[in-house]
Image 1 (cartoon, helix red, strand yellow):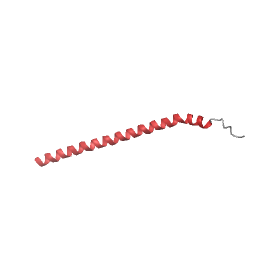
Image 2 (cartoon, rainbow, N blue to C red):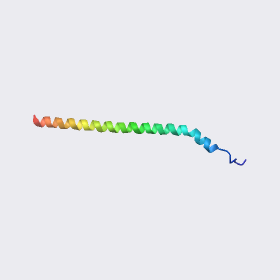
Image 3 (cartoon, helix red, strand yellow):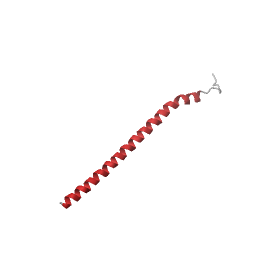
Length: 63
């Protein structure tokens, strides 16, 4: 049977796949945001730790 060129199967398939792709994009964005937050938290902890180390070294040198 020859294909009917009026058939819009590709569009219908694309339309049904769009919610799946949208959920995947949302999940990827959430993963990106969470990973960025983890990096920021790790950097803030490192800054805090280094600051405390400097204070401790200065205190040890003074005593």
